[in-house]
Structure formats: C-alpha cells, structure tokens
Image 1 (tube, helix red, strand yellow):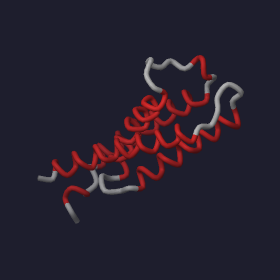
Image 2: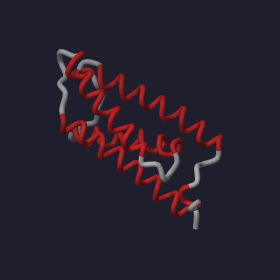
Image 3: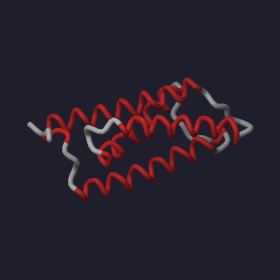
Image 4: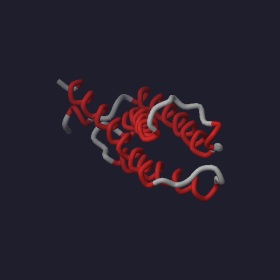
Length: 123
C-alpha cells in the first residue's frame, strides 16, 4: 500500500472521530437554530459554509483515512441533508442548493489538505 494512503495510528483516529462528531453536532445545531440567533463573522454566508465543512473534513478524513474519498461523499450528503432539514423544520431558514455546494466544496478542501499532508508525511 502507498505509505501516503495508510491510515493514521489508532489513537489519532479515535481522537479524530471524537473531534469530527463534536464538530458535526455543532454544525447541525448552528444549522437548525433560528437564523437571526446564529453567531457568525461578518463574511459571506458561502465562505462560512465552506470553512465549517473544511474544518469538519479534516478530522473526518483523518478517521476515514487520507486516501478515502468517502469522506467527501459522507460530508456532502450530511450538508445537503442539513439544508433539506432547514427547509422542512425551520420557519426562519431556507434550503439552499448553493449552501449545499459550498458545504461539499469545503469538505473537498479539508479532505485535500489532509491528503496533501499525508503525502508529504510519507516522504
């Protein structure tokens, strides 16, 4: 197996899983509370989505493994699901395909960062 694609050691993977789950719960909470109460920096909504999912993808990619594209797929589906939930469960929020796209792009960016670091780690 390519050394760059080998999984991280079990203690690192366990810590990454705990961090990923906590971040995923935080993202879900912030996605489903009423829109005016979300504490957020004064930047583009799409940049906030991209950044949140990039940060979520880093520990998720460490848990799944650096060469596993399933990380991006799982997080893209998770982000799209939260967008649908916003549309169905909230009177003050709406589902946005562009937000779902920003989520998927952020997940891709975080995954690529872990993949790149894993490649350099193997050298």
